[in-house]
Length: 228
Image 1: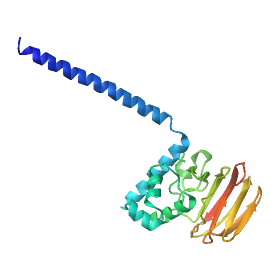
Image 2 (image 1 turned 60 degrees about the vertical axis):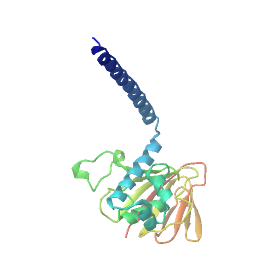
Image 3 (image 1 turned 180 degrees about the horizontal axis):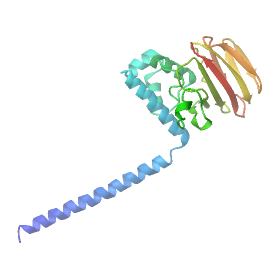
Image 4 (image 1 turned 180 degrees about the vertical axis):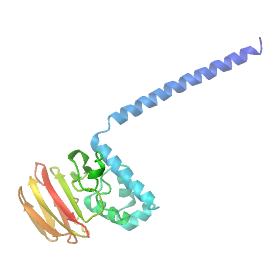
């Protein structure tokens, strides 16, 4: 009898620890589920883009410091983008695409997969790749198949107050577009153009440029890029 009492007490202590662990696990699980359920779609888009860009950086075996030196962004800015805290500007995304040697369409989130016979030729409305740059108020939907080629067509939606970023940026190729609805300011080098519904444009992408929606209504533009 003297020997069995300590064992019984020990078993009770072990059982109590297991019960506490289960309660603690349940609390953590509940908290995690609550956080996940409360994440807005825009935040999920930022997180997805950040993870994708981090994956590209890892694929190229680059540290944040090395990537910062190549693309001209600060380590802090890159870290925030990768963690989904903020969205990259159009200029930043273009620089990152050039460093990773991938087309601008590469970071786009995929929608539904098309049938095999449509791959590289057709993009259905539900199968568009969408890139949401929530910090700058710009959403880009890729209308062309994400295959190798020089032509890229986007449906660009610019929220009120949205823009490509505060700085002018450049890249290879040529681009043009058609304003389907709303208005926008298009800056090309040292000139600013006020475009309205029905207006269209074209310019060399090597020319410094940016765009902005300074109105209180959404602007939708069909935007074409010819890379190369």
